[in-house]
Length: 248
Image 1: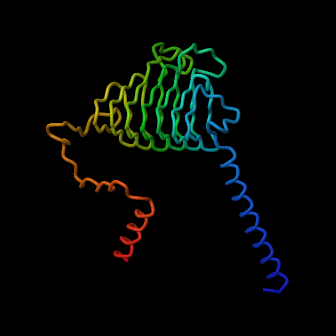
Image 2 (image 1 turned 30 degrees about the vertical axis):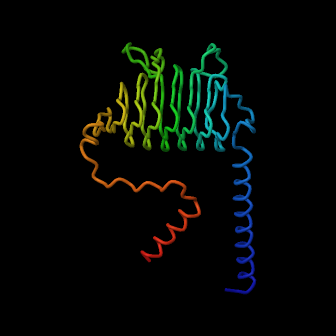
C-alpha cells in the first residue's frame, strides 16, 4: 500500500476514534443532565417525587404528572412510560392515579398506564419491558373495530417487596400480595396471595410459601448466604476478589 494511502487511513481512523470519544462523552453528559430528580425536575411536575428518586434519561412518555406520586429512592430506567389518564391535559380530580412507594425500581422500557388507580408498594422491583395497565380494550360489539370501542378500567394494586420479571404483564383488576414473584413473560389478572410465585399466560401459582410448611414445592437451589450485619462495600469487594483468586 502506498505511503500516502497509509497516512490517509491513519488520519481517518484517528478522526473516527476522536468522534467516538466525543459522542460517548456527550451522551454521558446528557444522561446526567437529563435525569429527573426532586432537585432537577425539568419540565415534569409530579404530584410528589421523593428524595433520592431518579428518572433516567431519556425518559419515555410521561403525562398527567400532577396525579403521579413517586416515593423516595425510586429508580426509573430509560424509556419508561408513566401516564395518568387516557390522554394529556385531563382533569382527573383530587386523588392520585399512579402511586409508587419508596424504593420501587422500574426497568428500562417498561410501561405503567394508569387510567384507574395503580399502586405499586415499596421495594417492588420490575425487570425490563414490564407492562402494568389498569385499562384494557373491550370487544363487545363484533361490528366495530376493537380500538374504537370504549375500554374497561379497574384499579391495580401490587404489594410491597414483589419482583416482576422481564416482559411480565399486569392486567386491570390485578391485586398482588406481599413478596410475590411474577415470572418473565407471565400475564397476571385477578388476585395473587402473599409469598406466591406465578408463571404462564394466564399466570397460575407454581410455588407458594406457608409458615407451617415453607416453600411448596420445595426450592431446588440452596438459599443464598445472607450478608453479615455491618459488612462494608469494601469488605464485600475484598471477599469477591479473594473468591476469584481461589478459582483462578
